Image 1 (tube, one colour):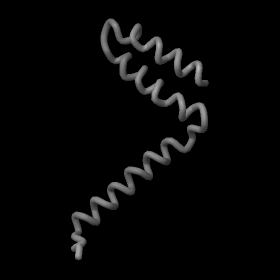
Image 2 (spheres, helix red, strand yellow):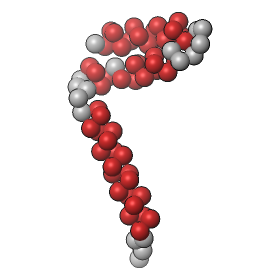
Image 3 (tube, helix red, strand yellow):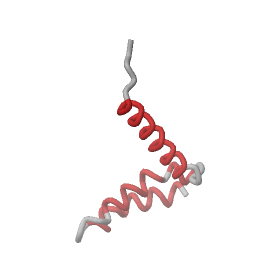
Image 4 (cartoon, one colour):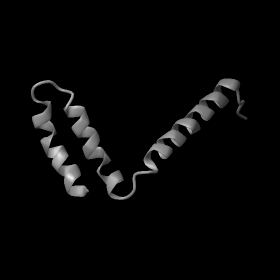
Length: 68
């Protein structure tokens, strides 16, 4: 028999809240926008790198443009 403690309940509520926030953020993205999300995220992450970031992000920009 499992004992439900206050910390377990709070952890469960936090997890449900986090997933709800993720779903709410992705809801406006439909079809192509959702499919292009990984390309856009990789591109934005690479652009942070000084000097070579923009050049390295070019294929990912092309990927997201092709999907859109």
